[in-house]
Length: 92
Image (cartoon, rainbow, N blue to C red):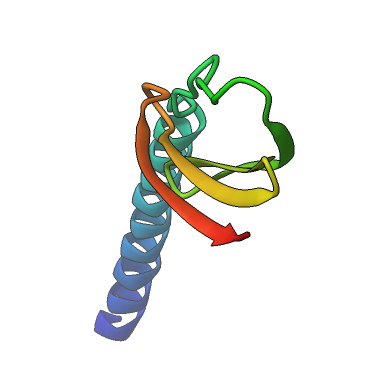
């Protein structure tokens, strides 16, 4: 009789734990789903007369490759503000 009571108690605790896990998963899902998307700058300022080769948003930065007077440059802009953070000359 004691074994039957233990088994019944174990099953009840197991169902209770599964219910708590389901609630936890539902809460995490709701928080992640409702998180706002990261801000992206509406525009970035490039020198006049350049030809844009590529533009990519990656890891919190906007990477713009452009050519001006035969010189290829990679410009890194802050994703949120659009300010130039770094500029690297790739080739001439």
